[in-house]
Image 1: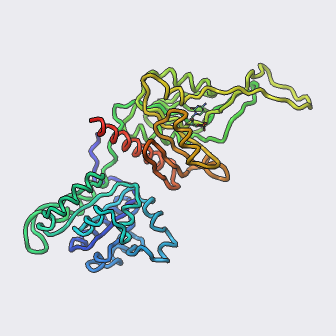
Image 2: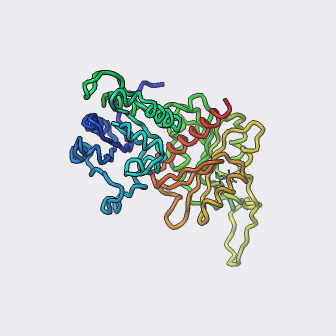
Image 3: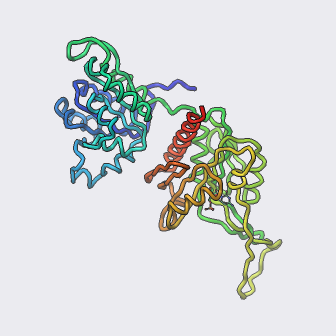
Length: 406
Ligand code: C5P
């Protein structure tokens, strides 16, 4: 794995929460570091934090107005708190006071920051800072343990001289150390895995010059293949016709028809993860004409026969990989997608609304991810960002099942 460095440029969207404590002044340096590294940072302060540092300081270093209250009509009319919670790739609270940790552990939503932590699906990082006895107190330690169990990532605290004059564990980690941890490139969590991705639409011939096709550009599948390779997987991309360049480190097999796509997928005997992002034609022309059909002036009909379901075939293998599929729906998104996931034997389905300028042939999209026992709503974002979130979800699901079986 490449050692990441804090100088690395990052395009992460980070929500920095600041709670009340003398270490709040160090959070100004943290925000500055993150912005310098290329992150887009929005700051949310608790009421108590504003007694230590003014919101204006954070506005100056982040370049954005600071949010302090939940029900601020003006701020909510811009990015409301749910949108803000979805916007973030990660939430980092520095300093995290004993009170803030207690409120998070209790699942409270009595101010903007705690509400955001409940509403977000992004990872939450805490850099605790408090007097050493407050840190050592069984109540705080129980809260820490509960938060860690729920997936919160703790950074520190460090030991040393404290603002209260005592010496011990409870100092906030230095901003540089927190920034470095946050800027680490995502783990190469797919290293050693064989990933197969289908992408783009298929072309079903009518005659030698005409075909049935759809509006799929291949962007989502290509972004997924690129992200899988970036995370260290050995990736094969089975692509229908697409003008997109082959992502770095990806093996590409070009196909035209659904039958060719199926044959290419079937030729790959073993895989750990299959992602069916292709818009496979459900039907093909029963008997494509051997020569160009002539215009007769009469109505013509084409007999269409169903194509094989590629993803269902993979999901039915005796040694099946984890299977991720897509569902493009024009109505009743959740119900149709949930039924499709089960019918095709998928482990995870990524559903999106199509039609009226949504979904196909666009650089961005919004997705509803459904799996057995869970769901994520991914707000409108670029397909590269969505690909990242899909793999984060895959990682989360497979981690949970690994933990459950160990
Ligand atoms: O049934 P529907 O076409 O909506 O299902 C979409 C999902 O099934 C996508 O993941 C798509 O790649 C996959 N699929 C397939 N083979 C087909 C049709 C769809 O793999 N013949």
